Image 1 (cartoon, one colour):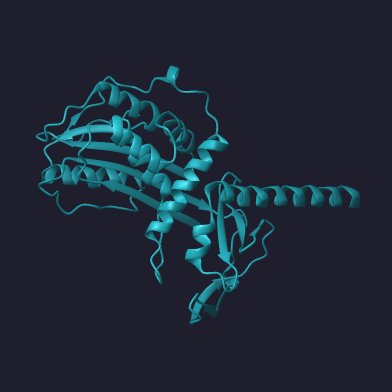
Image 2: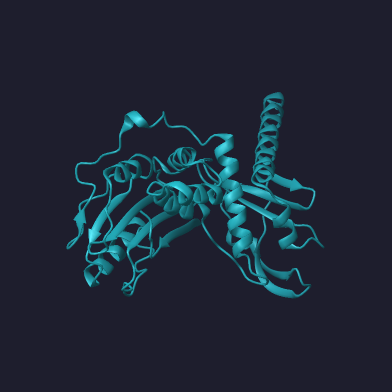
Length: 310
C-alpha cells in the first residue's frame, strides 16, 4: 500500500517587486544563462534547530488560521513557505520585514531552510518551483532576484502573455511535476493577474511496515462535540510513541526510514483549538524528537535481547 501526498501552492495576483526546463510555447524563459551558484550554497545538510523551530511556528500558525470548527483541513506549510520565500527575495524594506515576521525567519535563514528541506529530490519526494510573469504587467524582473531563486529554490521563471497558451502551459507544468496526479489547476487566467508563484510537492512512498487488508475495520469514532460516527479505522501495533500533557500519538515510518507520518490526538476533554493554541514550534519539535529517541532506545533494547538470546 502506498501513501501518495500532493501539495500545490498557487499565489496570485502578486504586486511585489534550478534552472527550469525549456520555456513552454509562447513563453520566454527568463532563466536562460542563469544557473544555481554552488559557491553560495553550503554543503547539503538538514535545517538547523532554529530554522526547524521557525518553520514549525509558521506551520502551526497556518493551521490555527485555517482550522475551521467541525471541518477537516489538509495543507502543506512547506509548499506555502516555498512560494512565499521566492516572493520574499523580491521584497525590500517594510514589506520584507513583515514577510520575515510572518514566516518566522530572516530571509537568509529562510532560503537556507527551504533549500535544505527540498533539495536534492529523492525517489519518494519531489519538489519543483516556478514563477510566471505577465509580459505586459509592467514588472521589471531583476537578475539578482532570478539568481536567488535559482540558488535556493531551483525555480524556473517565465514571461508569458497570460492567455490560453499560458493557462495550458501552467497546467502542463503542474501535471509534469506531480507525476500526472494533478492535471489541471487553472481554467482561465483573470485579467488582473500579474504573477503566478507555483510550488508543487509530490510524495509517493510505501509504509515501512505495510497495513494488511484485515487491519481495516469499521468502528465508532467520537468527535470533539460528542457525536459518534461510523468510520473505517486502521489497526496496528506501533513502536514510536508520541505524548505530551494533553495528547498522544505515533510516528509511522515510510520505507527507507527517511520520512515518517506523525499523528497527534488530543486527550478526551481537550478541544482541538485549545490544544493548537498551546503548541509552539519548539514544543512540537520536542514531542517529535522524544518519539524518535524512544524508538531508538527500543530498537537498541531489541537488538541486545536478540544478541543475548543468540
